[in-house]
Structures are given as C-alpha cells and as structure tokens.
Length: 466
Ligand code: NOJ
Image (tube, rainbow, N blue to C red; front, side, top):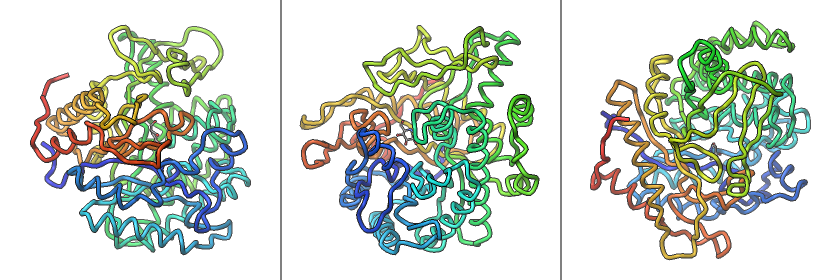
C-alpha cells in the first residue's frame, strides 16, 4: 500500500531546463563553460523554464500531480568564492516556490544537480576540499532563505554519475580519466553531502533531507562464487559508496581496502569521517532506469564506452573494470533503448526490497522514465511506449510497497522535455512535449493524460508479479 501523502510528480534540473544562463547576474557554471568551449549543444535556452515556470507548474497541477522535483542553481544563488548572495537568484526561486504552493504542488528540491559554479571549477572543483565548505555555505543560504517554502531537501543528485563521468570516464566536465582523482572527488562529494545534512539538522528547520542516487541493482549471470565476487565489486562501484556512506555513515571497508592497494586514501581524515558517520540522511531518493548485469572479469584493460549518440552508437556501450567485473550489455531476453538502456522493471521491484532491507529508510523514486526520439510537431505525441514503461515500473514499485518497502513518492523523469546533457535535446523524456524549434510550445503527450488518470484513480495499474 502507498501512503496517503504519497507524492506523485515530475522532475527536472536547473541546468537542463531553466535557460537564461547569463540573466539576472547568474554566473557561469562548469557546464556552460565546457559546452561553450567545446562548441557542443548546450542549455543556454533549454526549455526556458526561467520564463515558463508558471505555465509548466500549472500543467503539473492540471495533470493531477501534487509534487515537483527540481534543483536550485548554485551559480544563480552565490556570485563568487567569497560567498556573496545574488538577490535576483533568490527572488527567482521565491517566485517558483510561490507558484508551486499556489497550485498545491509540493516542492522537492535538490541543491546540487551538477551545475558547479565555474569559479569553483577553476580552483580544482571537487578535487579541492574548499569546495565542500563552499557547498555547506550555499546549502545554509538556501535553508535560511527558503525553509518556509521547502520541507523536502536533497543534497546531491547522483554522485556516482557525475563523479564517474567527470573524473573516470571523461565524457562530462572536467573530463578526467584518472582513478586517483575519482576517489578524491567521490570522497569530497560525500563529505560535502554530510556537511549539508549537518547544516540542515543544526538549523532546526522543519522537514527532511536526503540524497538522490542513480540506482542500478546488480544482477549476476549465474550463481557461482566468482560471479558473486564480481557482483560485490560492481555493487561497491555502482551503489554502495553512495548509499552506505549517506545512509549508514560508512564507506564500504572492502572497497577502501581494495583501493588502498594501488591508490592514496590518506587524505580521508578521521574528523571528516566522523562528520560522515554522524550525519546520515533521513530518506533515499532513487533514480531508476535500469539494472546492471555482471560477469567475472576475463581480460583487457579497464574500459568505459558510453553511448551518448543514440541510434548511431546503439550497441557500443561497454564497461570493464580490470580485475573487478565486466558488465553484460546484451541480454537476449531484454529490450534496449537507442541509448543502450535495458528496460527491466523487475530490477526496480527487487532493488527496492534490497535497499529497504539494507537501510530501512523511507524511499522516493526521484526519477524514472524512458528517453526516445520523438516528432513533437504533431498535435499530440502518442507515446504508448512511455505509458507501458511507467505502468510496468509503477507496478514494480507497488509490489515492493506491498512487500513492506516504505515508498513515499514517485517522480517521472521528466516533467517536460528538456536538455539531456551530452545527449542534447533530441533525447526526450518529458510528459509534456516542448518544440525547441518553434517558440518552445508546450503540448501534453499521451502519457501526461495517462499519468493524470492513474493518479486520480480513473485508471488502475494492471498488477502483476515480476
Ligand atoms: C539522471 C539525471 O539526474 C538527469 O539529469 C538525467 O538527464 C537523467 N538521468 C536521464 O539520463
């Protein structure tokens, strides 16, 4: 059973939807800088939510939703390294929050969804421990200004994704391929998250604070001991360093022991580890797109190939972590999107149970959805594939709730079409279509109406065991 106060909503992120990148004294983020330098598709305009937020939030209300997950842009709120506040940025978010409340939409707010101010990136970004203190300052500014309007806070969105993409795989800024740097950045992000949690608890403001993780439950190809060892390595790499650290205050010791054989971990100081231990989150937000199927490592160097080009790159994705595990990308029984994401709702059902057993915390699905190419010039996008994707995943979540998992909310990714990082705007996830070529016109897709009917009880989810 889902709780009475269950949140049903859609999600977005500041850089992906706001646009207005240099308006009202917003400063450059690391993504603006990188995408401009590399002349890649960017979020300068994106969905122009900065000017359309009222229309977007009203549509959520009209779509039967009662919550909106979005992020605040650090570069809109803090002007410089000295920590000076940009009053215009604060005023903008007050307007957004007031609008949410006007329409009865509960704001579910992330402090950091990857848009680090470039002035911090230039000092080393997440490799620089000062950035952790700067994050704490930024978090406090947000709590102090918005505590009357926000009671659901998230410190970080997907540490695994942005740290590994930025420091290990190299497809996101700052584009390093360096394991030592990855370990440092990962640690600093988790430490900064704990500082953000501590600041919230110390403020005494009402509400709860959590973290959002790119959750991918790990499955093995068989039940041999070798596969089970590979699964543990993969789970440490994909999930445990975020979830154990945020929820239990402990970085997995077998992971640290393994890393310490070849890398320096002496920068992890006891007083910081104590802060991590003492400031665990109130809830977990899980973004679920797919599981990770693994087999034992066989041969070859560590390899990461991410398909950021959709149909042109279909089938090219590859993950090998030398001596640890290999990811199996092609299960003949599964279907995959053009970006190589396996569609696997059972992973959500089983994964939720696992997370519940391990941590016992309340859980929100903070993102779930499917990225597709879509022609949005038609009157209505007939996204039946999205409806069936959502139906199957909501069924999986309900099964987990029936098995005792404390489910608190579900957010579709995304509330409306937006800019999808290296995949650009043509990878669409929205319940509402945005025609980026024609005045950013908004048109609800078929899934928007289906979601409304599901939330309001006009349509019942076809329950099945997975
Ligand atoms: C996770 C991220 O939080 C979001 O920014 C991204 O666009 C979606 N997944 C889709 O890949």
